[in-house]
Image 1 (cartoon, rainbow, N blue to C red):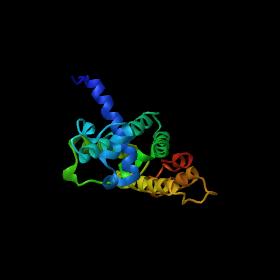
Image 2 (cartoon, rainbow, N blue to C red):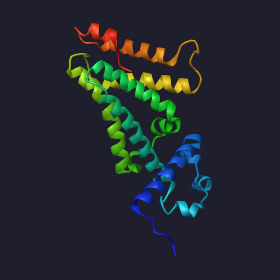
Image 3 (cartoon, rainbow, N blue to C red):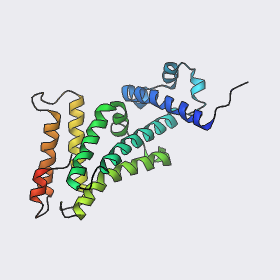
Image 4 (cartoon, rainbow, N blue to C red):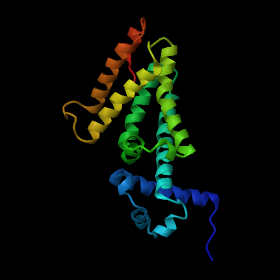
Length: 211
């Protein structure tokens, strides 16, 4: 007779499956990763895996959603680190870089792969929307406080694009070793900040800058 698992046990098993799938998908891509290989690493047959995820597409979706949620948790915690908006923005940049290098497989699932919108589950769409909001919210607060001037979404996207580019280059070993990663990202953030800085916010921007 099959042993019935509790909801908590099922959730633990599904998490274990996602952890293994995350590494396979990041390494081999969504097309190259196979349910059979994922199951074999766990010590199962592919048939056992399908009891928890009906298809590879469903597993990919769930694994990406979980990666987004872990990323968002890190960004949200950093955003609650203090009342000073300049310090908060720097903490968010630190948390972003820390997550990327601590969880490179999850980072790849978030930013290196994409799915058709029609194929995404409501859970994945919600996880993506949460991450996007958190990556824009702190800039919106800075604009509302008069520290930055311009469209918050555009400024936030500029900060993200530069930081993401530097992360990818660092992961690929393409950055000049004589220029430390943190030095480059802070310099890039300062340049964006100078362009978006509101009149009268110069002194604060010089002592601290986002990311």
